[in-house]
Image (cartoon, rainbow, N blue to C red; front, side, top):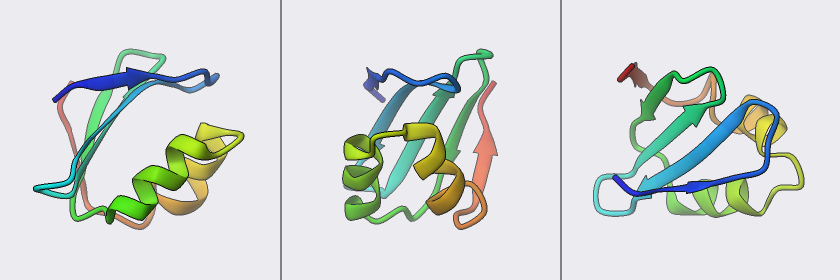
Length: 70
């Protein structure tokens, strides 16, 4: 999945597949997670948020099933 680099203290890059609803987050510590069944508006709001890390913590982290890739 292609990811876009973001300016954040905790998130390095973000990718999204509208076909599967998969949100991929690469953190600055090198870990990579995929979140399932994320609606596209949540991805768009994450990318437009003034703080990607804050938006992620408030709207993604505890709301969607995830798996650690690395």
